[in-house]
Image (cartoon, rainbow, N blue to C red; front, side, top):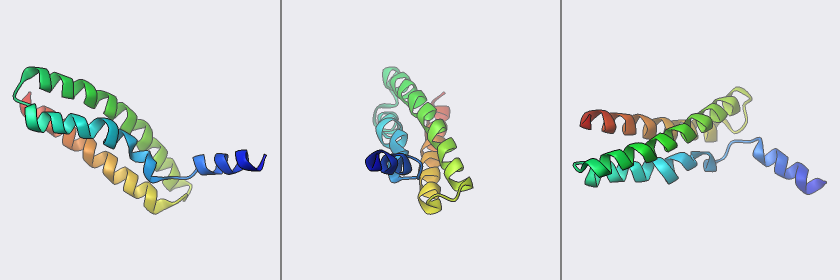
Length: 99
């Protein structure tokens, strides 16, 4: 029982791993748009990958705001918020300039 209580406590606190949408989905979409964005296949592939990344970022942004409200590792939650918001805004701007 002690191990499951420790795991439950670890799940309730903010961590750097909360930025997974930025690393796994938004970053590849941004790189694809940056280096091959003039091709229509790359634009649409980056847009689809980015949509999944924005969906994941929405969930993690909500979790980071909850962590801030409950004062659980606030600096880690702020870092996750900044990374996710910056990547999301950058992706939307990159997609909008090619539209």
